[in-house]
Image (tube, rainbow, N blue to C red; front, side, top):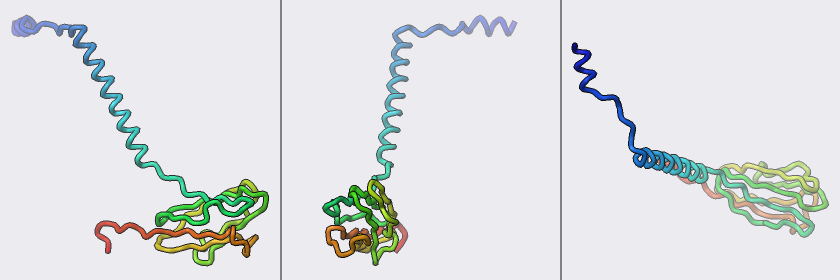
Amino acid sequence: MWRDACTSRHSPPTALPAATESKMKSFSRAAIVVCVATSSCAGVSTQVREPPVVTLDASGLRSPELIVDSGGAVSFVNADRSVHQIYSPECPELASRLLHPGESYRVALGDGPKVCHFEDLVSPSDEAYAGTVQVRESPRQPGRP
């Protein structure tokens, strides 16, 4: 008897009107689009920047003076027909192997501030293949002096 009383009081669920169901689907789709768009923007803001490039060609360096952040990187690209080899007396991390035509070399620099003068060991007296990389000071971390 109790069971009959409960079932008689409660009617089975009714279907939503078509207009309401359509609005809910549209809202769900819009929410998904917003979430995807927000996630995409977050991904863009955390992308790592490509390092500056020093191109060596027949006339010398295309970018002889660079400024990079502390701990940043620099790429050297040999676009010349001759071999080149990078060397720096102040920043040994800049030292490269022989770079044959078409080869590149990427190097991560240490902490700054510092200035790294570099030259081509194959042509050390040719000023066209000499340059500098200025490494900026590291930003101060909260809680550190």
